[in-house]
Image (tube, rainbow, N blue to C red):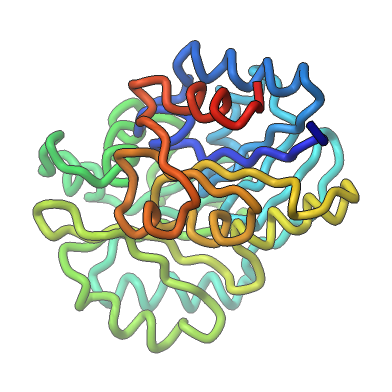
Length: 276
């Protein structure tokens, strides 16, 4: 088999939502794939700081911040934070519409006051993996600090949460030319979460940048994901695989569906396609 580049989403794909370490079967799959000569990269909405628990497991690189920061081994391929003007305009219109904001920087994340209480009111039985991740990470203080501690560091992405889709109408109208407002499907209670991502990049273009840097064609790429922010990646890679408990829309887009994380889905997907 020719060398492949394998791109892995984290929350709901490599790990359970909100967890920072994958099951042993996934670690085994990644190690075996690399031993066969394949490259394995994280492809995630998380910022660099949030990846620190995973990096010791031996990944070859990352497409982080939804494609805003791309690195292969020690080489930074792409680095594109918001401009100061973009950040200020986005933060203002989101606040004016009652949307909770969490800004993601290279060294950590900073969140609006009241968001923890907002998330704590949601039930664990909700199905939105992104919402569960943010709730657990806030409760465990995973480098997500109060907005009052923010000191002007470059921002790569803004995570947004609100109690209705209507709150996003003005932000989409005002910011839509420069940013994609990627909203997840509502949880069972109707609450909405998503991400504000610069239109200069996405996970799919991150995949392309890695391929161009390595001189490996897109036909030799594989991607695993589960939610709406994986759409660009799944549409770009040659072989796209969605987790069984992932978004119904993503399952329609993907070439195949593999079992969920807690059923060793990643390992079983790697085995099925001879990646490990």
